[in-house]
Image (cartoon, rainbow, N blue to C red; front, side, top):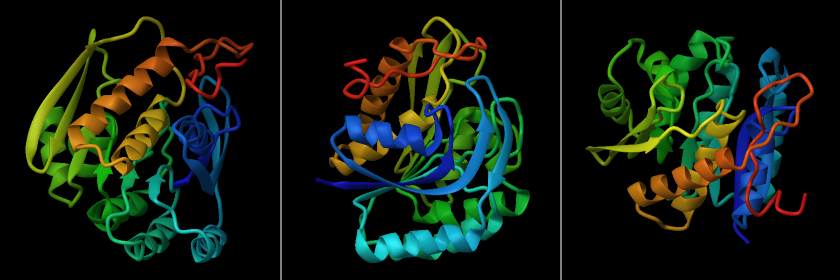
Length: 262
């Protein structure tokens, strides 16, 4: 069985962060491993607080894990501090050549709460992106990484200049009737569109998409095919989402192969 590692924050609802990543990995036949970077205080509606873990502890956990189990893929989510970003870069660089590294740059919560300090954002862009096989920010995250607002196609092209062979600027956070994702693969830009599914966007869809993308890249899929399959996976999760919260928060995603028996 292939080994999939997520390095991300922890979501107590189980719908986003490393909990969501592990559920995706399981549903796609991978053995999931996790190194937490932060503990969030959140419900299905919003992030109330985020406590970033001590960088030395995070990196010691990662070192011990990597000395024993070498992942076949790595998905990077919320990192939380510049120290974690700085320590992570050389460890990612030491992985076997060809290991798919997919970065989902969690920079702020949907309610606007910053989840990575400015110095960490710069180091993420300059030190982690050159090591990544793929990066999949939403439009707001892409703009934060580049320090400017622009059309998503231009953001995708410019992020590719930092090194990742595949950039997907997702459009789920845009207030448009059609979801438009802009994919820059080895310098070629394409736009993928789909009708927006009815209802509010479920909690954790970005994590779900990124983890599925990493899994499909590990299978050896071409970049655009992997993106299409990850989009289909995420849309299936959205379509099957159901509301579990008592407070009326956003529905949680239902993952095929994991939630079928409940």
